[in-house]
Length: 417
Image 1: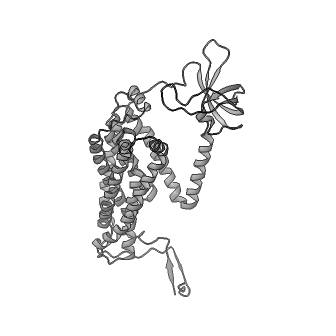
Image 2: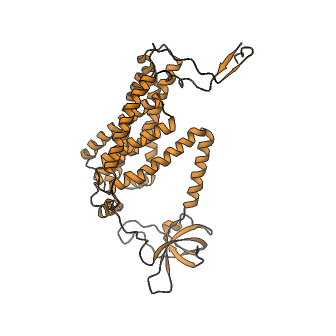
Image 3: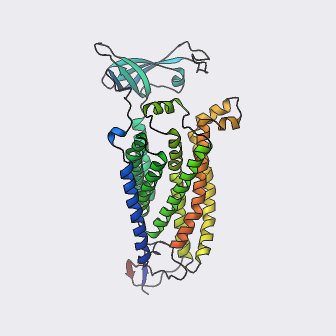
């Protein structure tokens, strides 16, 4: 008996033969792309509009050099339990490091107990601040930080290799999407914010443009991907509105550390409270994209498995999957925050202050608000995406076309295993 087989999996060929809908959606997405391109062009800052600050390590006679630790000694630095500012100070010995710079010079620096206690060993690569005022023959050195450049490069390469080996071409496209996303943030979003453009508008335009490109790049051009795109943009809009309302309601100023005050001094035109709102939109974009793509795919797979099911039945079935995804995404975001803010959480626990009092501070309150706003936008995006996907997927009256054969062989019918 002659039989055929196909590389297409369940749900992957349901868009064949729906040319009219595909063209209509292509027109809508094309118009959206034009609008976003114009918005990016309007918001794109000129080079002289972007706030700049002098590099503190780029002045005359000051530079950063790489060095290798050749010897480590413990020395008494006479530190007490309380620092000169009245805050608790780390007690213990300081570390005296003997180093050889990349230029072959010898250097000796002293590191504070907090750094020395983490462990400094012979052979460690570090960065030093080299100071040699004009007219002097000798240079002085100060410890800046450990040199983590190469370890991070190797870690990134290992991560990319694992992704490509497991996900293959889809993983390679995902890496390309990540690179493009980082590039868009560095080239457009950050300069636009430093130029004083409206942070919320920049975040919405930048996030929407990134998703428009990345979704089709990684997941391919299809009606299913378009459904995920519409769901993602709905989530971005909801998060933007909620973020704007929450920032004003909770009086988040964006000033929680010395770095924030320096940024305000360097770029006085920036609205730091607006930056907080913008961060709410961008922070949850990855998880939001995850749930919308999953829901769109779930709808398509359910339609392939149950061609006669009604749109309502498909929506209900896909929402069962969505509820599980919502549950896992909720604690995913909470764990992500707990991991990144572990030092702050430990300090909060050590202080003799109530949890509610600490939660109301600018530093912690902004993170709580960012997480909650992102969660609301994510949760609401699930039914919206599912409804859009159920509406765009083939209905029960649309007979899916036969699968396209890529090979035909003669022989007996294979037995089921």
